Every structure is written in C-alpha cells, then in structure tokens.
Length: 565
Ligand SMILES: *[C@@H]1O[C@H](CO)[C@@H](O)[C@H](O)[C@H]1NC(C)=O
Ligand SMILES: *[C@@H]1O[C@H](CO)[C@@H](O)[C@H](O)[C@H]1NC(C)=O
Ligand SMILES: *[C@@H]1O[C@H](CO)[C@@H](O)[C@H](O)[C@H]1NC(C)=O
Ligand SMILES: *[C@@H]1O[C@H](CO)[C@@H](O)[C@H](O)[C@H]1NC(C)=O
Ligand SMILES: *[C@@H]1O[C@H](CO)[C@@H](O)[C@H](O)[C@H]1NC(C)=O
Picture 1 (cartoon, rainbow, N blue to C red):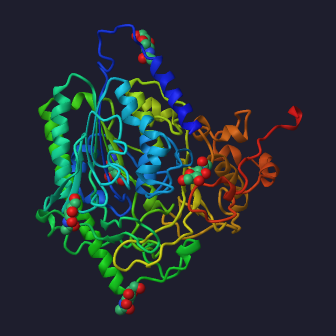
Picture 2 (picture 1 turned 30 degrees about the vertical axis):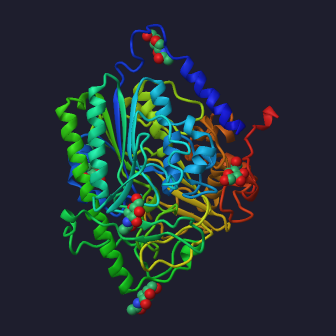
Picture 3 (picture 1 turned 120 degrees about the vertical axis):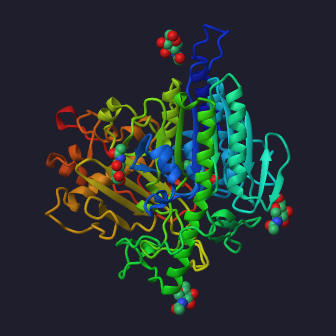
C-alpha cells in the first residue's frame, strides 16, 4: 500500500509541474489524439496479419511496423496492466488473470485505479474513451466495486461473458450491465468505438480511445470461481456469420518447429507427445476460425478509418494496432495457447501510424512497457519515474540513436492449453525469467525456468528455437555459449527486479563506469573472470505468484576496476 501511496504522490508532482500560466487555455490544446486497437491473443508468427487487408491498407502501408515488438508477459491481464501502467510485471505484481495474483481485483488492490493511463491523460487535458475487454475478472459482481476510473466514456465487456462471441455483456459508463444475446461481440465493440469517436470529435479536446475487441481469442466459458477443479473451457473462436466460410483449407504454417519429430524446449514442453492427425486437423480448423474471426476486426478498422477521414482527424491522430499477447498452435508440440517465452507468444504485431511516422520496418526491440511512454512523449507530457519502458523510436534521428537491445520477459503461475485436445491438467511449472537480445549482428533468447532448466537460442540461425545451446560448447560461434551464458545471467539478474531507468539501461548496474552498454561490449575477454564470478539466476520453487524469496539471488555484482577499490 505504501508503495501505491508513494506512486500516487509522484503522479501528483508530475501533474503539478505542468504549465498553468494560461488558465483560459484548455490544458490539452494542440495535443495529438490517440487510438489504440488491441486485439486479443493475436499471433505475428502464424501470419494472421496476411489475412487482414485492412491492417495492410491502413497500418502497414502507412506507418512504422515494429517487427521486434514484445510483450513482457504473455498473458492477457498481466500484459494489459503492464501496458496501462508502463510498468514491468515484477513492479505491478499483477501476474495472473484471476485473483489472488491477478485480475481486476488485484489491479484495484495495487492502487492502479488512481494511477494508470486514462487518469494521467485526463490530467493532461484529454478526453478518454474505452470499449471492449478491460481486465480479466472484471465481472458482473465487481464492475462497480469500484468503477474503473479515468474514463470520459466507457463500455466494458464483462466476465463471465467477455469471450462469448454471441452473448456479450456490456457495461456502459455508470449504467448497470446489459446482455446482448445473438449479437456479434466484435460488431458491438465496433459500434461503440464509432460512437465514442463521434463524441470525441464533437468535443474540443484531444482524445484517447482504446478499442479492445476479443478476436481472435477462443470462445471461453469462465467458471464463477475458477480453480484447479473448475477450469475455463476454451473452444475455437466464432467468426461473424458473414465470415464463417472464409479461408477453407488454410492450415497452420508448417515451420520447422511445428509438431517436430523430436521433443524440443525444456521443462514440461519437452515432455509433450507429438500431435496425431486428429489433433492436427482440429487445430488447423481452429486456426482457420481464428483468421475468420479477425475479418470482423478488419471491418472495425475500415469503419474507424472512414470516420477519421470524415472528421478530417488523420493529420492529428496517432493510431496503434497491436494485441495483448501472441499465440502458439503446435510449435514445440504445444496445444494452442500462450504464456510461454517462445517467440510465437511474445513477439507480437505493433504498427503505429500518424503525423511524422514514416512508412518503415523497425528492427530495434520495443515492448508493451514502452507504449505509454511513447504516448506521453508524443503528447509532450513529462515521463513518470515509475515507467519501466522508454519512448519507442519514431523519427529517423530517434532510430539512429536507438541503442537498446534487450527485452525482459517474465511470467508466474501455470499454463493452460486451449481447444478440445488440450492436455487436461494445468501445468504448474510455468514461472520463468527470460531475456531477448536483438542487435544487428546477434540475437539471442535466454530462458531460466523455475525448475532451473535453461534454454539458450541463437536467433540468427535458429529463429524457431529448436537447438538449445545451453551447456554446449561451440567455438565456431562469434559468442561461444560458455562465455555468453554468464553475461546473459548477469543481465537477466538486473532486469528481473529492475525499476525505472535501470530497466532501460541495465548494463550500467553491472558496469557503473558506463563503458559497457551492449552485450558485445560485455563480451570483451577482459571481463571473463569477472562474469565467471557472478551469481546465477535461479529458483528454489515454482511459485504461483511473485515471491522474491523463491527466486534465488537478487543482485548482480557490479564491476569495480582494481585501481578504484
Ligand atoms: C511549459 O511551457 C514552456 C514554454 O512554453 C515549455 O518550454 C515547457 O516545455 C512547458 N513545460 C511543460 C511541463 O509542459
Ligand atoms: C505479490 O502479490 C502477492 C499477493 O497477490 C503477495 O503475496 C506478494 O508478496 C507480492 N509480491 C511482492 C514482491 O510484492
Ligand atoms: C447470456 O448472458 C446472460 C447474462 O448477461 C445470461 O443470463 C444468459 O444465461 C446467457 N446466455 C447464454 C446462452 O449463455
Ligand atoms: C490423438 O490424440 C488425442 C489427444 O491425445 C487423443 O484423444 C486421440 O484419441 C488420438 N487419436 C488417435 C486416432 O490416435
Ligand atoms: C517490411 O518488411 C516486409 C517483409 O517482412 C516487406 O515486404 C516490406 O516491403 C517492408 N516494408 C518496408 C516499408 O520496407
């Protein structure tokens, strides 16, 4: 609680230092508008975007595609809270979809209802609107206990009907929830998005609109009190009636990591049996239904852009297309689902268009914790100290100066497969720390599981993460694994508990002199002995929530040259 009070105080400071010289001028005058369209569980790696001509037309052809954009938590609620606060999961401690470790109640008890994006934007003079999925476990029982703060207009999908494609429950502003049997979920969200856009355009203030359709998430029945005995049932998504026939015969891409002959990965992933023809056929149809459910999202996009053109707002509006986490289906033999640190789950679509955003592919890494800092920068709002991310590069100069090469990925708790053939018990060993390094000359994935198993992949040669280099010797590599591992461990040690600027500049914690800013710098042989003496990232148990006592050593040793000691 004390922490939440402190954060609240920091926000108060940031806001009070705003210019207040000209009281007659609305505080938001001249600031740009923002629209973010965030789908649910959309993949980048299974090529779903190839089936969305509206995304191509309005986003890819018009703006910057962040090809190395990551979610730092590959699960809906933790990822959305991280997006809405600009903070890493280990700092929000909203680490699951349901209480006690996550869901809307945890968001409230952590104090974020007074301390997140819409509240800050309103303080900066914005009108704020939101429709669609907010947070898991925001439901028929707790929707007004309390109401989510900060919204000028809101219309939320509520649990347990959030993921019912034809029986949504929506809750508008202060009004009681209302059920919409027979109407198509994504179309309901589209209508509300267009309505809020009308309201926003009529008001003389800058605006933010969050549009959060559920496609292509599964049709999910959420039990009233989820537990190990009563788990949600996840069935393939239902497309809109007008789209049911689409994409007959389209199959999940047969990449080299798809249902491989030999087991891959580590931990429970390595124990999975190969999928048989029945399961493959079921999952291919599941995949087709995902693509078809995205066609309604495309309709939504087309109509939002028609309206933006009609109101002549495109010159002053930044529009973002992304999702809350990725998705896998059959890669590493896994049942359909998310929650892993593999590329399919964490590297997600992220496209931004708007004034001054060039048409380009961006290859420097960015993450969901960077989204709010990016909006703040574009709106000229001073960044908050609690942000664990930094503004994403947009202009050519910013791209030239984008030196970050790391993304910190983490998760706590279990993993549930989806679909009829999922392994029926939840895997309770899905707590891990992971690191993605993305540089021009080298790329790695490094994962430490709560079982203390490790995975290390050279992403330049093995993008499908099939050849685990952990504990192998390979002197042909530029960075031999035995020299690479201790460096990655030290970096992960800093990132797994970093706050604020430390998350943006982690090498400074290990090399306070500032002479090491990249993995390449750290690979210098002069540091071999130093890194060999670092503590290793490890766990003493697979905890379901964030308990630092279960997570081994907490600090990397800083490098102090002998002449300074
Ligand atoms: C306040 O106004 C001055 C001058 O117009 C400007 O340089 C400064 O960036 C503004 N500060 C904030 C916090 O908006
Ligand atoms: C995270 O939240 C759980 C309860 O949900 C609590 O028991 C735990 O101590 C918290 N962890 C930290 C590091 O605050
Ligand atoms: C549809 O949702 C309402 C609550 O909003 C519920 O009472 C009703 O049982 C649901 N119908 C079906 C078929 O699930
Ligand atoms: C294929 O695998 C599924 C899931 O393990 C199983 O239920 C089914 O019986 C299997 N089918 C055949 C034909 O072996
Ligand atoms: C971005 O990359 C894709 C291939 O991934 C390519 O087809 C496209 O032309 C590139 N776009 C730009 C603007 O360079």
